[in-house]
Structures are given as C-alpha cells and as structure tokens.
Amino acid sequence: MGPSAQINLNYNLTWILPVDAGFYYILRFHFCEVQYPITKVNQRVFYIYINNQTAQEQMDVIAWGGGIGRPVHTDYLVVTAPGAGQTDLWVALHPEVDTRPEYYDAILNGLEVFKHQTYNTDSLAGPNPSIPQAVDGGHAVAVQSKRKSDAFVAGWAAAAVGLVAVLVGCLFTWAIFCRRKWKAGSDVVHVPEPVHKTPAPVLHGPTAYVFSVTAQK
Image 1 (tube, rainbow, N blue to C red):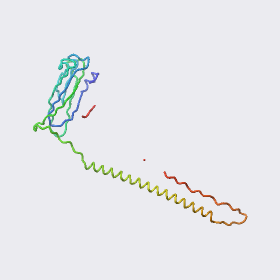
Image 2: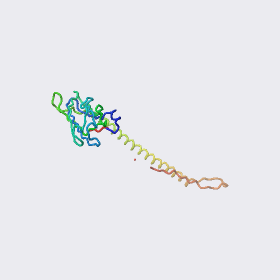
Image 3: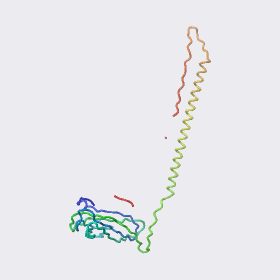
Image 4: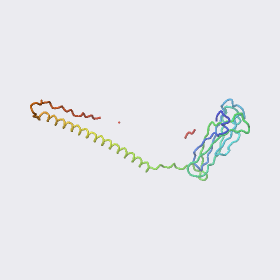
C-alpha cells in the first residue's frame, strides 16, 4: 500500500470491477511475498473484503506460503444480486491490527475473475449492450454536412461578388480616364489675348489591386 503506517490504517486498497448482475463469480487471489525484509510470520497481516464483507481475516502470505518467494492463491465464490445490466464488484484490502504485525500494510499480486452460470438458467449469457440511437446520429451528421455545404457556397458567392466588384471598378476607372484624355486632346478653348494658354492637367486614375479493462487509479 505505502510506506506510511498511519495512512495505510486510514484507507483501503480497493478495486471496483464492473460485472453482469445475477451471476456467480469465482475470485482467485494470487499472493507471493518477495519484498525484503518481510521474511517471517506476522510481519505483514491484512484483511480481504469482498463487497464490504469480510472474506478473510489475518491473511499472512508468509504463513500461507511457508516462506518468502513462494506463491499461493485462494478462491472465493461471490453471488451477485439478481437484476439486469451490470453491477460493481468491490474488492478491498486493509491492514490487520489485532495481531500487532511489524508492518501495517497489504499486498495483492494478481486477481482473476471467473464468471459462472446464473441462479436458475445455468447460462453464461449476459444482457446485450445498449444500441446507440442511429436516428440522432444520422441527424447530427446531416446537420453538420449541411452546415459545411452552406459555408462552402457562401464562400464561393462572396469571392464571386468581390471579383465582379473589382472588375466593375477597373472598367469604370478606365472609362473615366479615356473620356478625360479625349476631352483634353479635342477641345479648343478661346480666351482673350492677354491671358496665356496653359496645358491641360494630366489625370491619373486610381490603381486597382486584387488579393486558407479499464485501468483506474
């Protein structure tokens, strides 16, 4: 669990396993003490709880296996409550204090869950998973596709309008420039003699620019 005895005594080492309701289950716990300096009996002792019920008191891996490095396993039958769907299977370990062990700690090297038959049908078949609503999903896909299509059309329409506006502006500017130039070259202005003739001004038009098992902690 951890190096702090005080913290270990305040919490359980817990696993939550989702299983189908209404079936028998065999839970197989695997233990092997491999951590020095735990080599003797009553150095690490703990409880095993299954669904908030005491399954094993004074679990001492060294005592059960006969020494360090010797694997052992123990099985427990669990009967889940009848019902439909899934339910949670709780497994928890907690340090034992009555025997006053040297370390307040708990370990688990492995856990297997074997599903067995139901109460009265001897069947292993569980309920089918719920099928997602295809109608809602199809509607969502259609809406998203329509939005993309509308955005695409709007983008092209805006580009076309901008291009037409630029072309019209260029043609208008060119027409004004040609008209002014024609007037400057063809009109003759008669003025009284003391006034000197001056050349017509040169007009410059505007320039146009065109611009993308689930693991739980």
